Amino acid sequence: PVTLSIGDGANDVAMIQEAKVGVGISGKEGLQAVNSADFSIAQFRFLQRLLFVHGRWNYYRTTTLVKYITYSWLVVGFILFFYMFYCMFSGQQIFFNSLYLTIYAWLANSVIVAIAWFERDISDETALANPLSYQLGASNILLGYEQVLAMAGRALLHSGVLLIVFYSTDLTMGIEQLGAVMFVSLIMLMTARQIYLTGTIIWFTYFAYTLMIILFLGLTSALDHAETGVAFMFHLKAGRNVWAPAFWTTLTTVVLEYSYSGVKHVFWPSYTDILREIDRGYADETQHQRHGIKDAISVAELTGRYLLLPAQLPAQRLRAKLTKMEDENSYIYSAGDRKCKQE
Image 1 (cartoon, rainbow, N blue to C red):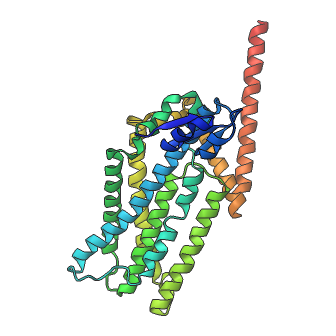
Image 2 (image 1 turned 180 degrees about the vertical axis):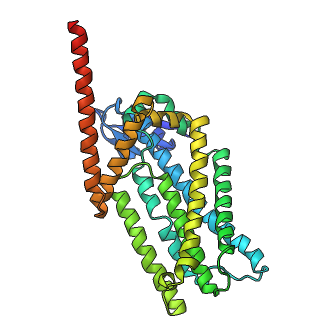
């Protein structure tokens, strides 16, 4: 069992060190408990925010990181396993250069670091107002048997989609080019999965995605050029042999993932899904469309600001127009109320 101990004096040091999580309170009895604890707070009332906000966020981020890392390597394992049937169990590897698997750990897991550090599924106000949301970690909902089986099933499904698209490509290429096709599709699949898991967008998120794209294009081109003497990914034939399979693999998995997620959230929403809808202002049906437009405009503005894309200026104009429409509507409603009161 996961135990929590709280103390403020030297007599509580043994209890704090024995528990899974120790919290020390700095007070009149000295700093012995604080120096031996995992977390330190100045007052006992701060424990509520420590547990219900930061504790819950930490559990959500940790479980998301663990499930994604396991999923990403399960996909690779399933690909290598099923490829053995294609090569008659000869021991031939689909990734001709072992460096592909080396840089895969960097490319496929770069953005998940931002998610594991800064992700917030619900705001701190919503978490404090709904203490039942803390059951997410207390009951280990995100790492139960159902979640683990769903993660393994998702990895099996996505690897199957990737192999089906792979077998439909031009198999007359050499083993080096086939490995490049598989690797590009695999990285794009992992990128799509990380985008799906990203709910909190800050400047570090854009930095992680930009760094991943630069490393992906640079490292894969260098490996491909070292093996074949030419950057096959940017060759004239690469559009049909490399990028087309990667595009169809990513598109298929994205459609499947969002279709399943949409049906689940509409017909079988969890308690966290409901809180997330309330937190983002989607609970009131009259406000749903307005908040959705504002969210899209905010994402476009941030994208234009951090990636220097021509999306910031149109987004600002749309926001100004939307704000003007809201001001006009509020003025009409207030004028109507004043008229009714006068009558």
